[in-house]
Length: 347
Image 1 (tube, rainbow, N blue to C red):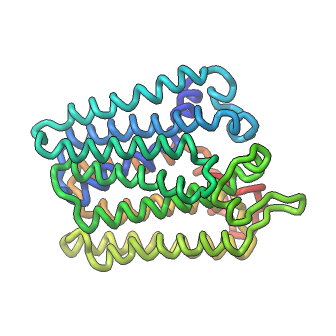
Image 2: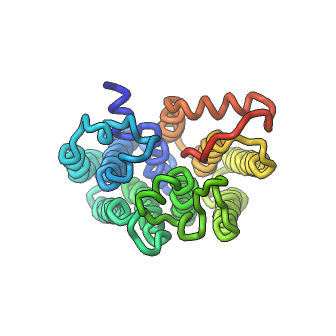
Image 3: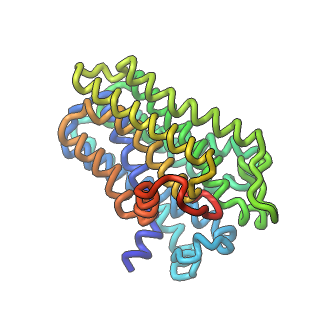
């Protein structure tokens, strides 16, 4: 029962959602009380449930032939599409109700935040409905990325302050992250099944294909992924180096150290993957963890205690509940290059 709930709501991915409004709030108001912090987590939880449950309903026919989804309640038929859709739709008014509860004395600043939240829901619904049917898949990837990024803008508005340069940098990073995760990681993971089902993805548009001889990775896709990766490394390093958060010396130094360390680990991981000794599933998981950790490392050193604790817990707990994290860490604990290879990257 608990495992079904875990899969139905995709708790393993919740950390990637939960930190977004918290980072947005922290980018403009580092010292935030528990009521607003918990309210943002509640809004993030309802948005997360909508995003993933609605996506699973929209992609149900494709997922029915995807082995990685075989144990999901919706695919097994234990939850009907109608019931799942009702849950997804019900999360929309619930998100606004939670926001109103947390608003407290934020009457003047609430409407902009709610507009961001409404736009985020609309963009996510657009991606879920047409994400694998759009003739130009990067467009729907961009819509999805903008939906997640607007949660950061919502967090800044919910904190009662105008968005600043750090807010904009975080939103840009999230947009790039989704283009990488959805257009490269996820598209390669589902490539074989998507081909059979006639789906359209960015990786397929750029020439990726599953052939009898293995996975075909064309130069165009490699260039696309490399461009995104360079930007994902450069943006948080620039934000830390220029102290966009206007942190005092010690928190600013900790942020710069954390971001540069994550950047170095990312480069080392990708170098090992390029050498051919890495297991794709483990590399994919570790790469995702590092990508998700960079904005957390950038912002949390300057946060007040409640917001910092909530952000770190929201980031780490879902990862600790994910068995793929431990598989990847076991691979790290052995000499790199000694393991075998999995069939495809898994995110």
